[in-house]
Image 1 (tube, rainbow, N blue to C red):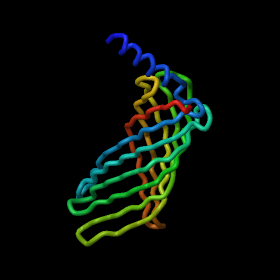
Image 2 (image 1 turned 90 degrees about the vertical axis):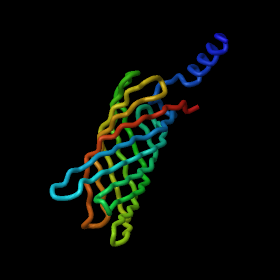
Image 3 (image 1 turned 30 degrees about the vertical axis):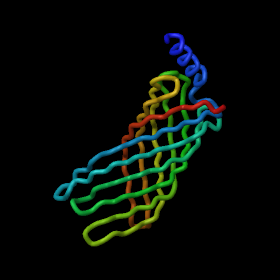
Image 4 (image 1 turned 120 degrees about the horizontal axis):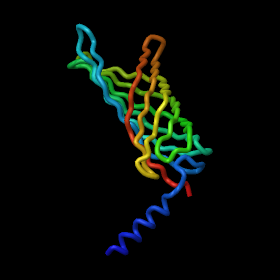
Length: 178
């Protein structure tokens, strides 16, 4: 039995051993964020944001890919917003550490938003840009725990603009590109 377990461990580690941010490798994962905003003389805002993504390293330390942003916000007891965004992204990783790597991420794309309240529902289409620094803490050769600070800018028309600073926590799985 020990021989089988040892063989499985050796095969698993040799198949997946590589430099995490080398050209041709892939990354799969995402981030999640949530928060609240306290508004004087009003209901408090509550939001939840989920961002799965997939990318490929086009050169060493530079990844390009796309993700989906699912966002839910409770504005008041009878009002909420739900949005869906398609966001191509680029990431630039700094350093060659096996444990900790800093990166900068920029993503932007189209957003569809639905606002519902007691008076009915409205739909908006717009544009979203997210940018910010992050750090990947590698738990092993293939998995990192990511912490990312994003500045999010939404624009639906000349009057509807939403700007936020969002703190994200997530993970990435790094796969060999071969």
